[in-house]
Length: 282
Image (cartoon, helix red, strand yellow):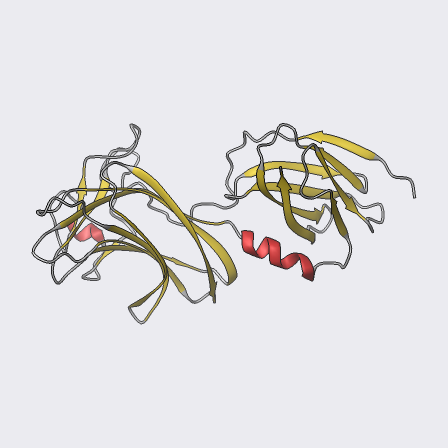
């Protein structure tokens, strides 16, 4: 079988994410820069449209301070004793085992004792008005700072995924924490690694891996079919999409930063995925 080697140079300046933001209201502002309270709920179980202003209601209000110049409003939560300030939003319709990434901006005020308030962000599931946290991240930053973490959830289409933001319980003090620019996306990186063993045995060979200068991807049973290669960064950003018209593709990685990347190869005809895996650039 004749083999044709195709040299492709990848650049890492793309910023398109693996998936869309599942949170419909992530900035708390509408197109006219007015407060947008839709699809978020407080600890009392009410949608925030009941009190959509700067007045605190059920430990929730809005504040005219944001991490960017293009945004206007942030979410302000107040935690005390015995009630913590909570705001939640819900996502439905997701099924199967997926890796989710929660990304958000947060800052906190000082408490009466002089310590900075603690803010919490959680991913979990909800049923019968009960929230079950799967993973939580907390911090006490005094300036706007972006945080992110990933979590793997297995759900049915009828299940509810919850994103909960909170200002923790505080004895004889008040926790005040601000949140803005909240994103929940599906990056599916763990599935990408684990699923490779379920595809056609031996259909994809990647070598050398790890690699310093170039890496070759060989489709051993291409049957003269065309394929599409998609490469993602370790954070789920789309790096490059390449149509493969031969059975061997050699990638010149000298313009890629060192690190971990994920790839996916699918047939261009029926879109069936024939392989997934990881590439390590040294």
